Image (cartoon, rainbow, N blue to C red; front, side, top):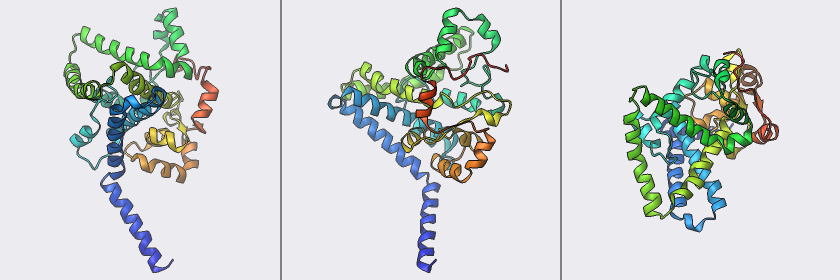
Length: 311
């Protein structure tokens, strides 16, 4: 390599390190998400509903991915600024502090898939299953198919959140009340911009941003985890294309994320390529070639039995 080539290579590496030190990729992406969201909402009347459903859902999911990134990475940014960057509740329904708390519990590897201890588990204990009625069992069983999870799953998720919070209040635990009050205050300017400034109906916003964003989140999480004796073999790898990789900030390479949760999203693909064999051996080859493979297999077929095989 010539001296010039070595100098240019060193400059490129230095520039990359500078971008990483400033968290520039994530900050630029965050600005792009908020600008895209504001533009789509403001000019919504000129956009066909079908197009807005797809693009609005992608923006909502990308914002949710940024919130997830702020839980784990962005460590060079002070915590308050990190929270402020992703705080605006574009999807309206889930306060960021509750997401932060429950998702942090989910990352205790020993508890992965546990029906009570893993906040993101879709398994049910045998004792709980025995107490369910026929209708609830049928709904839970149907929710193991991708079609049901995408279409009805978001409503089930909202129902679970409401029941959980109501049970907390009935039990005399009002510790989340302050979080919900702050969330209501945070939602107010979002709805003001949507409904007053942009003259967009709430129903259209829910249809074209909130609902498809939750559907994309349900697609990503559909087969992230399964039960196995080894915690590492409970976490999947979905080697998807660049579009879904960006939407999910490479969280589809989920085993890498669980092993290195503070790794920035833009470093995950390179890490996986360099260590592909070791990663797949570690997670027991719990692997999919992409989301289309998951659709073909599980659109109408259950991915697993809802009763947890161990607990």
